[in-house]
Image (tube, rainbow, N blue to C red; front, side, top):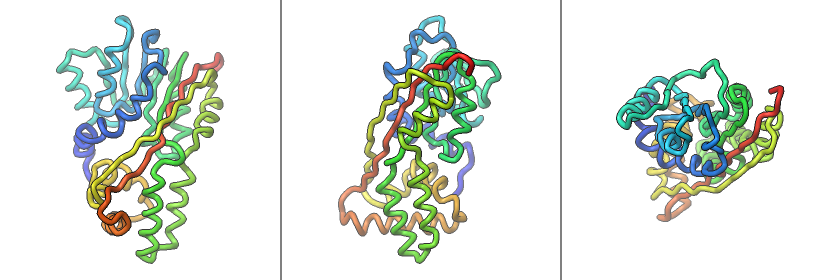
Length: 264
């Protein structure tokens, strides 16, 4: 069932900000020199949780501007900022001006769109650019079951789409090459593997992260009815294999930080 942007925004705030985004932002820590940042832009700030945490780490004279993915997310983020009297500027579109540093959340950016997204956001930075995303090796357990599910449904001809999901995820070395092509130097890359665990197949496919954010993107080659059929069969396939045990999948989370070279 497709959801409205408003519904997705509430799901993002309730379930995704903590269990997904926070695991990525935990990578940042000392890797982003926030204390020395005058003007910082944070792109794809969701409902503002990490932005509010980040603001507390900035120098008193620093300015933080955040771009939310859509207006519904921006409304929630602004309400949070107003409640704590935050000075963060939340907006729903990329600004025209440039900033000392830019941080971009690419965790939900589709691989085919990644280079264009990073080029656009890196172009807004004068000095430092950082981005984070899942890299190759992520979701392997899911993709394996997904291919098996299509086989069981006699949709083997669509198995090539699953192979594409596996191979189109950028390797860590690919992200570093992209960063270099964007004019970044003094690169620092950090990765960590995070495990997501579910009691059974039904809990897995019905979780907001999977049902509302990951599967719709992965199964875009199917219509909505076919997606529902695959999700139902996927849960059954998982349960038949794990035999009463919990289901886990892993995500290789990667952060890339670099300095802008002059001329870019």
